[in-house]
Amino acid sequence: MINNRALWKAWLLAVGVMVPWNTVNAESSSEDAIAEYRAMFGDDNPAELWLIRGKDLWQQRRGPKNADLSGCDLGRGPGVIEGAYAELPRWFADTGRVQDLETRLITCMTMLQGMAEADILAVRFGDGDNKSDLEALVAYVADASKGHAVSLPMTHSQEKAAYALGAALFYHRAGPHDYSCNTCHGENKKRIRLQAMSKLDDAKGARDAYTHWPAYRVSQGELRTMEWRLQDCYRQQRMPQLKFGSEVAIALTMFLAKNAEGGVMAAPSIKR
Amino acid sequence: MTDPMRVRATLMGDRVEVKVLMSHVMETGQRKDIDGNIVPARYIVKVAAHCNGREVLSADWGPSISKNPYLAFRFKGAAKGDKVSITWTDNAGESRSDDVAIA
Amino acid sequence: MQQLRRNFLAHAGQLGLAAVALGSGLMSRLVLADEARPPFTATVIADAWKALGYGDVKQSTEIAFKGPDIAENGAVVPVEIESRLPGTRVISILVEKNPHVMSASFTIPEGTEPFISTRVKVAESSLIHALVKTDAGAFYTTRLVKVTLGGCGG
Image 1 (tube, chains in turn purple, red, orange):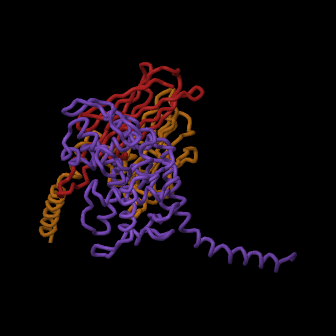
Image 2: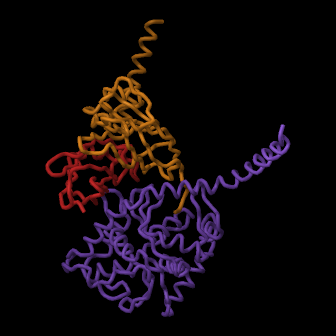
Image 3: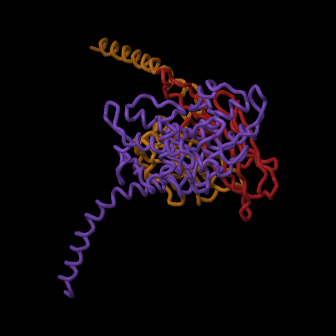
């Protein structure tokens, strides 16, 4: 008899509040579940297998010139990999152009080790037993930037030009669907099926995305790099194939990296 | 040509915790390649772990263990510096062993 | 009528064989590889139990079974099993909706903890079974894992 009405009101309130709250939270709860799933991998990211291989490839004497990569300058001096990825892409004097990590590694492998660029590019994306040395080296070098803040002073005019080109490309609509990067990555809280999309012309969105590449992609069972990510986006947009190491790929990387400046590198990470 | 495993063995109290990542395609034999041909089944069928001359784990695997397999287990009766070795064998007869000293 | 039936069955049998052959040996290759391991050819849980020689399999609340509720990708689903049942000798993982339900069996010698952590492929949202053989018989528990597509990107 006590407060039957009060109890009834309270119950109604609880139920009334509960229903919309659950609906609103459905999306974030699935995101939480996915975050939980990713966290279950702990320290045991299969990317570590690429780190083992990458370290070996960096230290081994290889190629016609029988040289290791200790002379490879990734922007912080010959042989310095610590923090190097966090400062790429950048302009290099010896090649006279802005380069990302992949193209810089190709420069080193061809110049220092005498390897043929075509041979390196033939296995730029690994597949099972057909392993990519480039992907292993990218993983190894990127790992040495873990904990470092992305830093792109962009002192050189070509670096600024690369950023401007990247920005223009980000908003440029093309292809049969008239998509631009901005179509999917221009707003927060967008998603494609269950895949959340970051707003990439925004510091927070760019940081969330950029600091987590390269990554072990469980759906492929492979470690993938930024160059891979970009050409796969272009493929999904039904754009013409994005050429590996092209000015476009590097410009887009520059745009993302600069937008992500200050973000702390967490790669190699694990992704769907 | 097999690639190295990443093996970690850590002494926690009186137990050794072993965490392994193996480099293996674990091909089920149901996947098709880009030309539409079946990629032949190739997967680890047997795993064995040893320490101080005794077997501390053995396993029979099928193709539904994930690619680049992960395995963790715990055992007692070993000390820091003792060697833990892991061996896998696949259905093609390929085999790989890697070991690590307990840290 | 009988003759028609016999013909039909014979024909169906041939069709069945043809279908297996047409499957480009994908199933049969798997079966051949695992011929010596009957549990790995089982397509339903009960057959796996039988092939393992487990008579009466009872559900148990003494098997701690950790895993995700939603797996972003079914290719890699982390599972962690810890048996609190005394005398645990074998821990097996089975995935109900997989074409072949048996993923793995782990033999736990004396001195090794009845604990296993690994990652399995789950073809579609399914119950995963943690199956334990002890000195007192066989026991199991299950977890439901939802497998999503995940969309593009990321």
